[in-house]
Image (cartoon, rainbow, N blue to C red; front, side, top):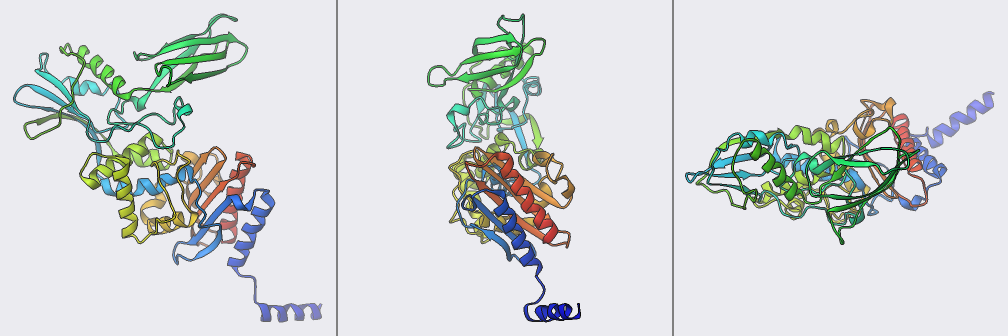
Length: 445
């Protein structure tokens, strides 16, 4: 025993004790090897927040589609540009000719019911009612979004005419076994349903819209379970048309005469503000960073681009704002490509190293705005790390990602980014590997 102990002491004197860094690296390498996922499809960057030094890297410069973790790098510059006191506002103005102008603010939280506050301030016989929709541009969808996924309620169109989340609620109700179901809409909107849903033993149906044939026709096909109705939210095909329909409803409820056309007119100095509707930007921070809301992300990015450029908000202006933000922080953007704000498009490319650099530079502002374990998109993940982990997740077809901050048991804080692009592995296997890597960071970091 004495001989073995002596040899052990001699070994330690020569080679030293295994360092925490080596233990962390080997732990992550073993975890990745045992996952069965191709290392070539995995990109990982882990850096010490205090020193900025890399403690682990695997393909850290490889351009990867980041999915929704991209929302961090687009929304943080947007929030800072807009300011903590920013409010989404829909305003009503009046001029000396008794003309009323509704200036849209692209408010993602505006509802049909709230329009009553605007219409109550308009007299019964106005000389005209106009709309200024110049706050953001007319592009209603992100570049590279899948045209055949336009009925996905997570990907509604977005514009200056945002209202009711740009979704309309439909109810699919069973009738008698073997007979067609009933499809009803909660709000009036020109949509025709080709109803091929039959009342049966199970609920299994599809909704399809062929925009190249007729954007206002939806084919519903399949079965619905007896005695159990289904509520679905359908993205509005034409937000401008829907907004004007809801505005007309509110105007008619007040007994105001109107053509329902509402021509465009630009706000000028001849108008005086009468009233407004507004919502706090703090709500948007939670919806973007914790709940991964695409509509709010795209809207906020364009609005910030508009403020930055003093022009109509657009993705292009938002991109210039983003690049200038990174330039001031000396963050290299040469190895990334942004084509939308939310990460929905697979045309977006980002490296894990870029993400961890961004996280370190903006740690104080960003960390506690992200969900911790048990919140938002982490509501069912890594629950034992509540208060120690703050992170954003991302998911697209064949792609899974997670990025954020984790504080280890040794009280070291790391910025990390894990992106997995592997078509051969299951989504659950990708997420499991992410969680095992984060567990190694926590236990061995």
